[in-house]
Image 1 (cartoon, rainbow, N blue to C red):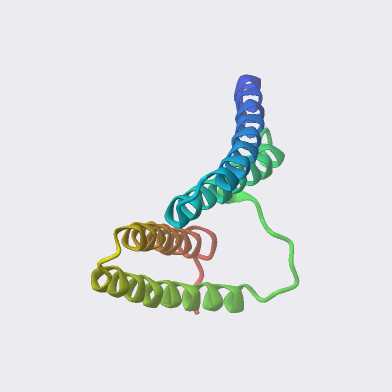
Image 2: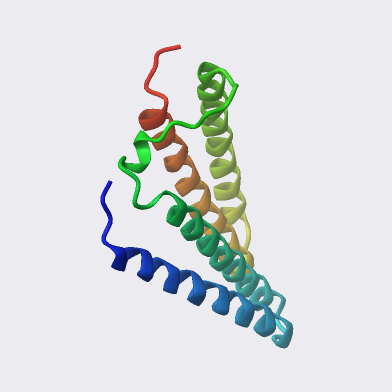
Length: 142
């Protein structure tokens, strides 16, 4: 996969920005009084750190001759066992989505409801990501 050098530079700049913002969120979290605000800021700080780490990992793969999906992970594990474990995680994500949704419906606390809805969105994204991995990286039949 041939990538323009400017994309690599753009990603490096984004990594730097994400790290700076994560530090600012850390400072800001200490300055707010509201527990709900602290939790939301903490959530954003962790997401921002995660973004930086993912972008750094993507930089390592950029510029190779293949698409990201074409890379082979060289591990000793049985691919069928890995696929089965991924499918188990998909089921667990479904359970978590259901439980979080139920708790969000039950609570009258607006801040807790907001946080639970954020968690539910994350779980939906995790679920979709796991399905994508199984469908694209593990195409074999078990």
